[in-house]
Length: 222
Image 1 (tube, rainbow, N blue to C red):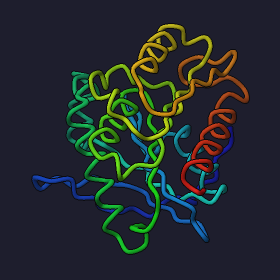
Image 2: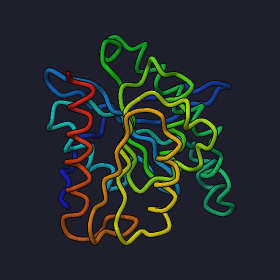
Image 3: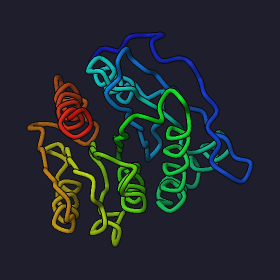
Image 4: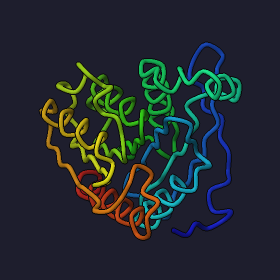
C-alpha cells in the first residue's frame, strides 16, 4: 500500500448542527463522475493511511472524495477513553446525513451522484443514512464494516450495497452475512482471501480499493 503525500490536504469546515463543525478533506478530480463520502468508525479518521489510499484510488478513477471526521476533537478524546461514541450509530448517521446535505448544497458538488464508503461502525452509519435519504445516495460500499448495527434500517436501504470482508475476519464475516440477508436492495458480498479485519496483508487493501471503484463506477457513473 502506497499513499501520495500532499494530494488531499485542503481542509473544509462542515457544519452538522447545534454549533458543531467537523473538518473534512474534499478533493475533486477533473471531470468527476460522482462524489464518495467516507464514513469512518472505531477510532479511524480522515488521516488514516487506509482511507487515504482508497480515496486516492477512487480519485484516480474519476470520483471526488470527502474524507471527514465524524467526531470533533473533543469527542475523539472522550471516545478514546470510553469507546461509546464510535458505537453511537444514531449520532454518526446524523452526521453522515449532514455531510451529505453539505455536498448537495455546494455549487461544485451539488450535481454529483453520491456514494458512501463506510468502515467498521461507519458502515452502519452510512447504511442508516442511506435508508433515511434513499433519493440522495446512489451506492454504498462497506470495508470490514458492521452493517448489522444498522439493524431495522437495513430493510429500507435502496442503494446497491457492496460488503467487503476479509476471509480471516470470521466474526465480522458472519455478521455481514446476517446483515446481507436483511437487505432488500441489490447487494453483494466480496470476500478478500487471506485478509484480516484491517486488510493489512500485502495486496489486500488494493483489492478493496478496486472492488469499491468498480462498484461505484457501475452505479454512479452510468
